[in-house]
Length: 128
Image (cartoon, rainbow, N blue to C red; front, side):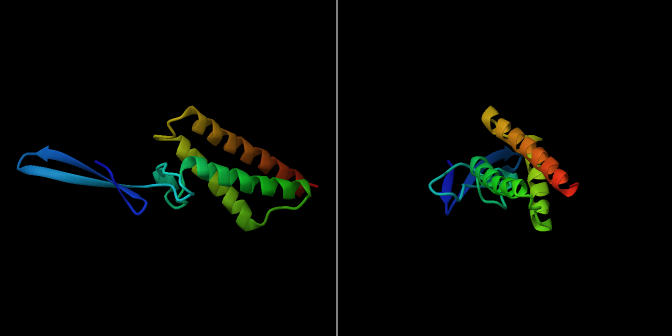
């Protein structure tokens, strides 16, 4: 049975084999946001949040960048790098196992579209 220890879910699985059994322990962390107990996908381990909270945070930050672009203010190099990383991470999350719910997949696709639109806005400002 899974056991919660300081935000880490430990799951034991016994596998019987010739000469004995092997115990495999996998570690899965729970979201660090508020009372959320959703599991964190391996791709989001550094962020420490579940997919829903990660996307909420990313969309909030992208909205701030979009607002600055509307005021003709270009993002700095660090922000551009962060935006690129979010696109890479979204693609990683969509590939492989990917999210199980269609709502999560739709939000990741929306993130990629949002990043593409923001990229075009930035290019437009740079070409002025």
